[in-house]
Amino acid sequence: MSAIDNSHYDAEVFNAGIALGLSLKDIEDNYYGYFSNQVELAEMYVDNGCIEIPEHLEPYFNYESYGRDLSYDFSEFDGHYFFNC
Image 1 (cartoon, rainbow, N blue to C red):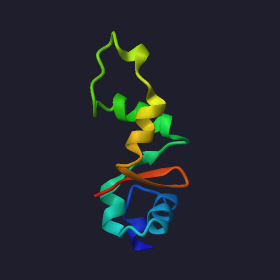
Image 2: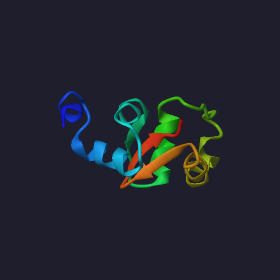
Image 3: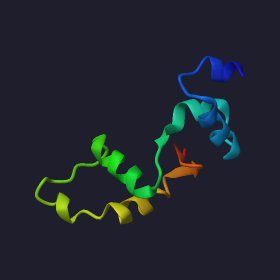
């Protein structure tokens, strides 16, 4: 409980991390965010500048496929995504 009290994350994030078998440190260090699906994950990943898509190619970019590919780099529980390390 003290980890939750001393964190800016809520209990729901910690419950998701623990369900995935992550340590408290890994939960704090590797939490990426809550997304309702892999498409939202991919959109946020691109918006955060993790990859650059030239403006003229963005209409052709397949966020659904990219989100599916990103899922190999993340662990997910109940919509909460954590980087795999």
